[in-house]
Image (spheres, rainbow, N blue to C red):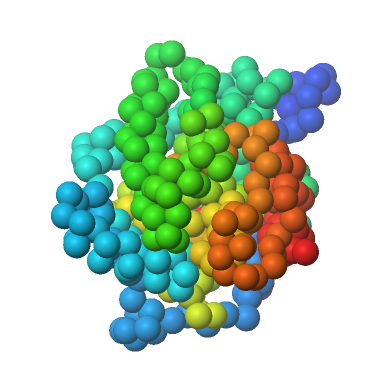
Length: 367
Ligand SMILES: O=C(O)CCC(=O)C(=O)O
Ligand SMILES: [Fe+2]
């Protein structure tokens, strides 16, 4: 197969070598005139060994939680839902959520703000992120996962913005920060309710996880992912398989499907549905529950026809929190702690290093 000779870096505009050249974004590559029907080999992603699940097989139907029933005043209704939630968190580590109270218009406004951002020129996007260069945990704009160090490029651009406990202003004029703040406040309410219900479903006090992980001062990010249409979607990967480093993720998209979750060793394709969020339990949940609840493995595929924009609301402890398997659960279940205690900041660094080699950081803190 002939591989096109598209340069993956943008050369500096003049001959003064002021800065290292910028790495070309997936969007720019997808729109470049030289990209017709074949992608550069730097994007060839080798398949893993898992098969796709049969979408009609009842074993692989992604479970759904009706949020309004979870927050219901009826004790019977709530205890039935908590029982269901416990099974789902143990077997899947992810689920769809309906009736969550975030309006479609707010979600649409956030998707449109993200789309506007990605439509800025490369220079404008880099300049916005550059304002916060000294602390990249506030804003990061980039492509792939870490385009400077990874072996294979991913067909994805992203902007990641910190929204809690403090938040930076992306660009005063474009309204991005304002809508991101509104949207993230809503997803924070949902995440808090879910974390309470999850605590209770483990037979713990509803505030147990919230307090143990100091979520009051926890970090929250809004990560917008942009996957342009890809001429060879079977060869490329939008986001390689991973678990999220935080505690819980609330995910939505522009109603274009692409996310897959791993269940019983098969990839289940999530059909994107309006008014529905996908909740993914993440690594800190697996640590604090001593492996009882699962951090769900997932990945993002791309397609030929339509761009996909996803919004991941990532909720974690504060960077200084020492996360440890719950001593209450450890004692009650009579099972030794599976993971060593680790500061969230240290875990985040470990996860970044592990993802370069497509490894899971959780495996590296096993006792
Ligand atoms: O695009 C998606 O649906 C997945 C995003 C994701 O997994 C992430 O940002 O961590
Ligand atoms: Fe993820």
